[in-house]
Image (tube, rainbow, N blue to C red; front, side):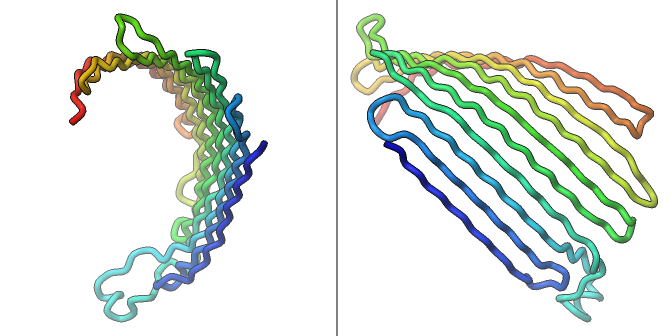
Length: 231
Protein backbone atom coordinates (compact mmCIF):
# COMPACT_ATOMS: atom_id res chain seq x y z
CA UNK A 1 0.00 0.00 0.00
CA UNK A 2 1.05 3.57 -0.70
CA UNK A 3 0.17 6.83 1.01
CA UNK A 4 0.21 10.18 -0.81
CA UNK A 5 -0.04 13.69 0.59
CA UNK A 6 0.05 16.88 -1.47
CA UNK A 7 -0.02 20.42 -0.13
CA UNK A 8 -0.04 23.60 -2.20
CA UNK A 9 -0.41 27.28 -1.35
CA UNK A 10 -0.48 30.57 -3.24
CA UNK A 11 -0.24 33.80 -1.23
CA UNK A 12 -0.47 37.28 -2.73
CA UNK A 13 -0.49 40.62 -0.96
CA UNK A 14 0.18 44.28 -1.76
CA UNK A 15 1.23 44.82 1.89
CA UNK A 16 1.14 48.21 3.61
CA UNK A 17 3.89 50.06 1.78
CA UNK A 18 4.10 51.09 -1.83
CA UNK A 19 6.31 48.79 -3.92
CA UNK A 20 5.94 45.95 -1.40
CA UNK A 21 3.90 43.38 -3.32
CA UNK A 22 4.46 39.75 -2.32
CA UNK A 23 3.80 36.58 -4.31
CA UNK A 24 4.60 33.34 -2.47
CA UNK A 25 3.97 29.82 -3.80
CA UNK A 26 4.70 26.50 -2.08
CA UNK A 27 4.23 22.88 -3.14
CA UNK A 28 4.89 19.71 -1.12
CA UNK A 29 4.37 16.10 -2.19
CA UNK A 30 5.00 13.11 0.08
CA UNK A 31 4.60 9.48 -1.02
CA UNK A 32 5.47 6.51 1.20
CA UNK A 33 4.75 2.86 1.76
CA UNK A 34 2.27 1.84 4.46
CA UNK A 35 2.18 -1.25 6.62
CA UNK A 36 4.52 -3.17 8.89
CA UNK A 37 7.15 -4.17 6.31
CA UNK A 38 10.11 -2.16 5.01
CA UNK A 39 9.38 1.58 4.84
CA UNK A 40 10.21 3.69 1.80
CA UNK A 41 9.41 7.36 1.22
CA UNK A 42 10.01 10.18 -1.23
CA UNK A 43 9.40 13.88 -0.61
CA UNK A 44 9.42 16.64 -3.19
CA UNK A 45 9.06 20.32 -2.36
CA UNK A 46 9.36 23.61 -4.19
CA UNK A 47 8.91 27.24 -3.18
CA UNK A 48 8.90 30.51 -5.08
CA UNK A 49 8.82 34.07 -3.78
CA UNK A 50 8.73 37.44 -5.54
CA UNK A 51 8.95 40.52 -3.32
CA UNK A 52 9.10 44.23 -4.12
CA UNK A 53 11.35 46.11 -1.69
CA UNK A 54 10.13 49.56 -0.49
CA UNK A 55 13.34 50.47 1.32
CA UNK A 56 13.74 52.71 4.36
CA UNK A 57 12.12 56.05 5.14
CA UNK A 58 13.33 58.93 7.29
CA UNK A 59 11.07 60.35 10.01
CA UNK A 60 10.29 63.31 7.76
CA UNK A 61 9.37 61.02 4.86
CA UNK A 62 7.20 58.87 7.13
CA UNK A 63 5.35 61.94 8.41
CA UNK A 64 4.64 62.98 4.81
CA UNK A 65 3.64 59.52 3.52
CA UNK A 66 3.88 56.38 5.64
CA UNK A 67 3.15 54.17 2.66
CA UNK A 68 5.68 55.80 0.36
CA UNK A 69 8.87 54.36 -1.07
CA UNK A 70 12.19 55.79 -2.19
CA UNK A 71 13.08 52.60 -4.09
CA UNK A 72 10.20 52.01 -6.54
CA UNK A 73 12.28 49.72 -8.78
CA UNK A 74 13.92 47.47 -6.16
CA UNK A 75 12.84 43.83 -5.91
CA UNK A 76 14.03 40.37 -4.87
CA UNK A 77 13.11 36.80 -5.74
CA UNK A 78 13.75 33.29 -4.47
CA UNK A 79 13.22 29.89 -6.10
CA UNK A 80 14.02 26.60 -4.40
CA UNK A 81 13.53 22.87 -4.70
CA UNK A 82 14.15 19.92 -2.37
CA UNK A 83 14.00 16.14 -2.84
CA UNK A 84 14.31 13.45 -0.17
CA UNK A 85 14.54 9.70 -0.67
CA UNK A 86 14.85 7.28 2.20
CA UNK A 87 13.63 4.23 4.00
CA UNK A 88 14.13 1.76 6.79
CA UNK A 89 14.03 -2.01 7.24
CA UNK A 90 14.00 -4.08 10.42
CA UNK A 91 15.49 -7.54 10.93
CA UNK A 92 15.12 -8.96 14.42
CA UNK A 93 16.54 -6.46 16.90
CA UNK A 94 18.35 -4.43 14.21
CA UNK A 95 16.83 -1.56 12.23
CA UNK A 96 18.64 -0.07 9.23
CA UNK A 97 17.70 3.36 7.83
CA UNK A 98 19.09 5.89 5.35
CA UNK A 99 18.15 9.25 3.86
CA UNK A 100 19.42 10.95 0.70
CA UNK A 101 18.52 14.63 0.34
CA UNK A 102 19.18 17.22 -2.36
CA UNK A 103 18.19 20.88 -2.33
CA UNK A 104 18.89 23.83 -4.56
CA UNK A 105 17.99 27.50 -4.35
CA UNK A 106 18.50 30.67 -6.38
CA UNK A 107 18.02 34.15 -4.97
CA UNK A 108 18.28 37.42 -6.83
CA UNK A 109 17.89 41.08 -5.96
CA UNK A 110 18.01 44.36 -7.85
CA UNK A 111 19.07 47.68 -6.28
CA UNK A 112 18.27 50.57 -8.60
CA UNK A 113 20.39 53.12 -6.70
CA UNK A 114 23.53 51.17 -7.66
CA UNK A 115 22.14 49.59 -10.87
CA UNK A 116 23.20 46.38 -9.17
CA UNK A 117 22.05 42.77 -9.58
CA UNK A 118 22.96 40.21 -6.91
CA UNK A 119 22.44 36.52 -7.72
CA UNK A 120 23.18 33.63 -5.35
CA UNK A 121 22.93 29.98 -6.38
CA UNK A 122 23.26 27.19 -3.81
CA UNK A 123 22.97 23.42 -3.94
CA UNK A 124 23.47 20.79 -1.28
CA UNK A 125 23.45 17.00 -1.16
CA UNK A 126 23.48 14.92 2.02
CA UNK A 127 23.51 11.19 2.77
CA UNK A 128 22.78 9.83 6.26
CA UNK A 129 22.79 6.05 6.86
CA UNK A 130 22.25 4.79 10.42
CA UNK A 131 21.56 1.62 12.40
CA UNK A 132 19.60 1.05 15.60
CA UNK A 133 20.24 -2.06 17.69
CA UNK A 134 18.21 -3.18 20.69
CA UNK A 135 20.15 -5.34 23.16
CA UNK A 136 20.31 -6.41 26.80
CA UNK A 137 23.99 -6.14 27.62
CA UNK A 138 24.43 -6.52 31.37
CA UNK A 139 20.78 -7.54 31.73
CA UNK A 140 19.44 -4.00 31.05
CA UNK A 141 17.19 -2.85 28.21
CA UNK A 142 19.43 -0.83 25.89
CA UNK A 143 19.39 0.82 22.48
CA UNK A 144 22.51 1.53 20.43
CA UNK A 145 22.35 4.05 17.57
CA UNK A 146 25.23 4.57 15.15
CA UNK A 147 25.39 6.56 11.95
CA UNK A 148 27.33 8.55 9.39
CA UNK A 149 26.59 11.98 7.89
CA UNK A 150 28.13 12.99 4.56
CA UNK A 151 27.30 16.38 3.07
CA UNK A 152 28.52 18.55 0.20
CA UNK A 153 27.40 22.10 -0.58
CA UNK A 154 28.15 24.78 -3.18
CA UNK A 155 27.53 28.53 -3.31
CA UNK A 156 28.03 30.71 -6.39
CA UNK A 157 27.58 34.49 -6.04
CA UNK A 158 27.55 36.99 -8.87
CA UNK A 159 27.27 40.76 -8.42
CA UNK A 160 27.04 43.13 -11.36
CA UNK A 161 26.54 46.89 -11.34
CA UNK A 162 27.92 50.32 -12.21
CA UNK A 163 29.97 50.76 -9.03
CA UNK A 164 30.94 47.18 -8.26
CA UNK A 165 30.94 43.77 -9.88
CA UNK A 166 32.44 40.45 -8.93
CA UNK A 167 32.01 36.75 -8.66
CA UNK A 168 32.84 34.30 -5.88
CA UNK A 169 32.33 30.62 -5.21
CA UNK A 170 32.36 28.59 -1.99
CA UNK A 171 32.47 24.83 -1.47
CA UNK A 172 31.96 22.86 1.72
CA UNK A 173 32.35 19.16 2.47
CA UNK A 174 31.42 17.62 5.82
CA UNK A 175 31.80 14.11 7.21
CA UNK A 176 30.60 12.99 10.60
CA UNK A 177 30.21 9.79 12.58
CA UNK A 178 28.27 9.31 15.81
CA UNK A 179 27.42 6.66 18.37
CA UNK A 180 24.93 6.75 21.24
CA UNK A 181 23.77 4.10 23.71
CA UNK A 182 20.73 4.49 25.99
CA UNK A 183 20.27 2.07 28.87
CA UNK A 184 17.28 1.77 31.19
CA UNK A 185 18.64 0.92 34.64
CA UNK A 186 15.35 0.17 36.32
CA UNK A 187 13.23 2.43 38.54
CA UNK A 188 13.14 5.16 35.85
CA UNK A 189 16.91 5.67 35.65
CA UNK A 190 18.31 6.27 32.14
CA UNK A 191 22.02 6.17 31.31
CA UNK A 192 23.16 7.82 28.06
CA UNK A 193 26.67 7.49 26.63
CA UNK A 194 27.54 8.96 23.24
CA UNK A 195 30.17 10.55 21.04
CA UNK A 196 30.39 12.37 17.70
CA UNK A 197 33.30 13.33 15.48
CA UNK A 198 33.03 15.67 12.49
CA UNK A 199 35.42 16.95 9.86
CA UNK A 200 34.75 19.81 7.45
CA UNK A 201 36.62 21.47 4.61
CA UNK A 202 35.69 24.92 3.28
CA UNK A 203 37.02 26.45 0.07
CA UNK A 204 36.32 30.02 -1.08
CA UNK A 205 37.36 31.28 -4.50
CA UNK A 206 36.98 35.07 -4.84
CA UNK A 207 37.44 35.85 -8.52
CA UNK A 208 37.06 39.58 -7.87
CA UNK A 209 40.16 39.52 -5.62
CA UNK A 210 42.47 38.41 -8.41
CA UNK A 211 41.39 34.80 -8.07
CA UNK A 212 42.37 34.44 -4.41
CA UNK A 213 41.72 30.97 -2.99
CA UNK A 214 41.05 30.37 0.69
CA UNK A 215 40.92 26.84 2.07
CA UNK A 216 40.22 25.91 5.69
CA UNK A 217 39.64 22.60 7.42
CA UNK A 218 38.51 21.89 10.94
CA UNK A 219 37.58 18.92 13.08
CA UNK A 220 35.17 18.86 15.99
CA UNK A 221 34.27 16.21 18.51
CA UNK A 222 31.73 15.93 21.29
CA UNK A 223 30.87 13.35 23.91
CA UNK A 224 28.04 12.77 26.37
CA UNK A 225 27.73 10.89 29.63
CA UNK A 226 24.44 11.49 31.41
CA UNK A 227 22.39 9.80 34.11
CA UNK A 228 18.74 10.88 34.19
CA UNK A 229 15.79 10.06 36.40
CA UNK A 230 12.28 10.12 34.99
CA UNK A 231 9.85 11.69 37.44
